[in-house]
View (cartoon, rainbow, N blue to C red):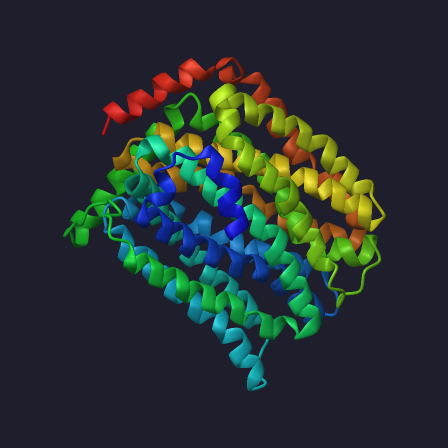
Length: 433
């Protein structure tokens, strides 16, 4: 954590790290991220072990975790703009803590099942959707719109640094004490995040509505429609959102099968701590990408950054599919982590900059819902395909999603949008508040 702070500080306004509200927010978020990164490694290992090495059931975990965004994203985004964001986020953290703690508790009394693991994953994923609805609007309210890129860059850099340390820790814990016991780390991290949110003195923005019954339903429907229209008509946010769907289709298969890839193609044991390295590798390149994003966005058009990153992703996906040695796979996964971070972080930062405050929850959650919509499909198809055709062919076939997105984005007017255009669009969003 200290290292991430020191690394990101040169790219931030000096006042940002002297801001107590941001420091508390950052500390809570990175603690929660650390716990989630441990679970990212531990949970699929646990499912893989309990199911006797089933690729389909292991990949199904990611499908289940991705579905809630599709199911609740539209409503959550609208609600996030109507209610007080702090209680919403705290409640979600507490629900996630209970869900994660239920797995080692059930194991301790001898009643743990794969179905319960799926259920706990679904609960935390559902809580994540609603928490996101509050977070997207809370960050600009806490730090100010002019510091969103710097603040988000600090969060992303810390997240990617933890992808290096916490995922390696997750693999080591799974090997040393077992994946079940390791899940206590995530449960506690959610409690820490909830506590820090309650201590932040600054407002999280949002507004409280007292509407009930039919008025509430009609109001939500109207506000969802407003967010969708803004998203659909935006010359930058919409193409990036559509492009994200194909990318997530591919990433769903890659991430959902990472443990299977390590065991079947790289020859690792399902108890090998080096399985965590596969998740860690992506964080190595992603740390560099997160640190570089604030500086890059001041010199290069942000849409251009995404276009180049999409193009690089294609070559890396092919390399990962063909790799058979652990060192080569780690190197390629690190590079893929960097390009993926540029795409995701740049897209989120752009949405927060170019969206009026009154629409932050709706536009950001809806865009993320669509962009991530391919992930559960990719994970489900990839899992079934891998059990019949092998991981290598599965990765090559599923790379078609990212290929389609890359070709689509280069064909849109996005490639002609420059830094001056982004500045004008940001000013328009500020005037619309």
